[in-house]
Image (cartoon, rainbow over all chains, first blue to last red; front, side, top):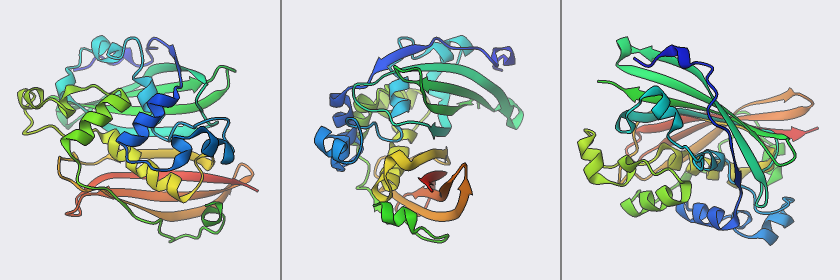
Length: 147
Length: 139
């Protein structure tokens, strides 16, 4: 069983730069042909300062952590047993190419179902930009299959 | 595009978005582009050792498809919230169909909020993701 005393634990925070090349690759990988996600001029014409990150891309940037497995290692979770259970994004401001954003994740809950056959870890992440403005909040539920 | 949001009514359906069947190449590209390098999605040897018959799709790839459904319908800067529950695993060969329906139009924090129920399913109608999004239109 995952030790519930880790509820409330803050994971290492880190900052990442939003880069155009990476967004173009993401647009290709997700079949997104909308020009605002690949072309700066199209993005500006749509009212953005530069190419905006698409709605789910903050999850990808969170994977840029220098210690992407920090939570799994802390909780001793086998990567082969994990599934993504739920994902939530709350948006406060756009994030565009040229922004430098900071992720501050914490473990907000740990619980079990089916007599421990399934365990759940909830990670809450606050995301701020280079102006210390809150741009988004993420909630990620990881499921660990013990059976 | 803003017109569809400002004129949204409960019961309106968003234009359906359907993908081609998911291939191994799609998963390899998403692995690199997303930064999610969990081998269970791209390494068959690893997947079998972990008790799976085959590699399977990243849940977040399907969520990105739902994101395309949303931003194809209304401007992204008006998206306030987007959440999903991953109901079942998406397999190689699944063609994903993304659907949305307006479930509420209400006033919140000085703006009109349009709530959309989201579903993604494969070609057999098996539900893969269920979710909800909320857009805001300043009054």
